[in-house]
Length: 412
Image (cartoon, rainbow, N blue to C red; front, side, top):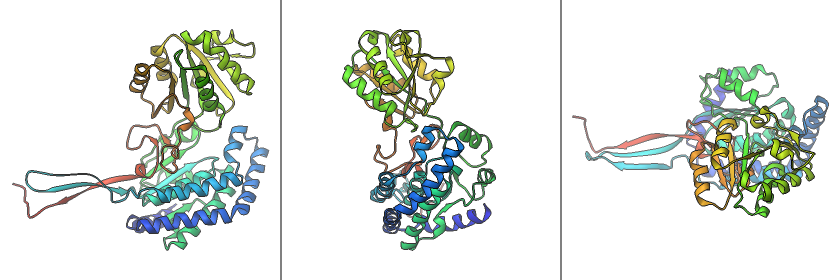
């Protein structure tokens, strides 16, 4: 850790003043190398997949781990999209002049060295490395043991991009071991790391928050909700609910609980539940929901607070908007919630009264993704309230400093 940290600190000083053109050149070169290295990456991923199956990883975790030509192309495209983003470093956020003539500027500046600890998603290697680079930060990446070979293959492409652009290879480092002791070393490396971003399951995030001596961008579990009111058309409700739950069940923006307004029971509940069941989704419901279909399993109190990351959803009938908000505030994880309604006042109340990082009106919770926000990619969805919230993209990976210009002023 000391060796990697020292190298990262040195690299961070170079990146802080690197030109936009140089950073973009590294990103685009890495994207090209990624495409040209598809077979090497697939071979490495096959090793991880075989080990994961032997280890008994869940279907959701295997889906997160799996790479194919399409996903590798998307990773490369993500790096190019990051290159196309405006460079946040040096941007003047605000400026003003005081009565004494002093001119103040608040300017974006890199955070420094960012540690990213993540689990089974090998694409995070490229997303995190690319975003940190564009924001002028060095980074130390610690991927999960499940994706170790895949992450190494992707990281090698990033290093080639750095070399091609004349930037230090230590700008993006990957921890070269699966030893879990390295996580502890990163959490106590306050002399080397400026912030840590954990991206993984509840146990990982809890450990990071409990043990870290370095500031943390918390990415908590995504217990996401969709609330359906009677005013929304059934076609829209079916389309959004199906996408929110089943487009990809293993992402943090997947809906885990469906709430249906009591006034919509006759018109919406049965079609929505039947649709989910017929699509292969297990439904765990309250008493009202179980009346709809014999295939519905009884929901327990634990189900309302569970992030399944699988083809399972909890369904509950609530009396009204107030009850829906109360349920989400009680059981949610402050990640992403959606309301499906044609009542603009109810939509506004839902968005104003709930304090989740992302709130949607008449749209799928699976839009909880940095790329969909126009951020190019993301390191994760921050659910804390300090510094970064929602998708953590290039702007969220900067801080700011003040530049003050005078003409000889002294303080009386």
